[in-house]
Image (cartoon, rainbow, N blue to C red; front, top):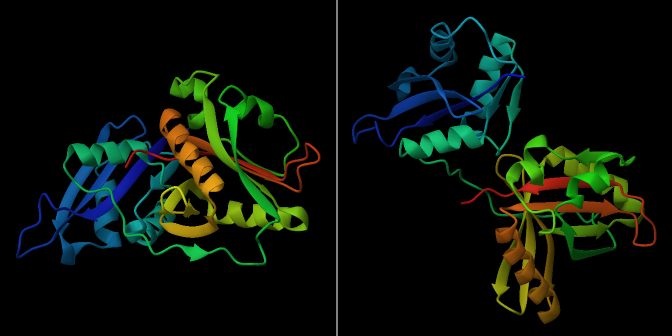
Length: 267
């Protein structure tokens, strides 16, 4: 499958105090530049973007990827007219690297985290660890209703030793287990971050999802849990950002409702 990554943004490199310049960048998943064009802000439109595609090779990609929420709707309309599926994802790694090389920002404005709806929360949760060698093998062939293991997140491809412990969170959802797993799949989990409020004493777990959404999964005020959270954060660095989220009804059997292998990129 041929995937191109696309971004449309106001260029800090090209803009001046009197004129905002926007730039359209297209690259492949290996980071090879396919096309770049810029124009004044007032000229940015669907028609201008479509005109840029006329300069490209006749062979179109099978899918487009975009990570910036500010341009997602506009590029979605362009993709619709080009009849190319568009995927919104924070994991557009190649184009982010290309933008950094051009000294452009890849950061996006994120809203404050919202509390998880009470109707979704499960019965218990805990930090957990899983050997990298089992993070794919243990779950891939099991009849798990919701399973998300991206090929790019395979520890072998990332060069991780199979013995490295991947940090993660297990939620026992009880009767709400499937409802919670379906909601998570809908919001597209990206990462689970430990946010300390008082180091060693209290903090919370924030779910980053979609392009810029944030949800408070849990808060705690307990030294023991805070210590486990710090270990979680340390292991996250050792695992190159690879971690997991597992939903199960309870801890008494091996039935799983949902499993996500997640990757937090370096910030």
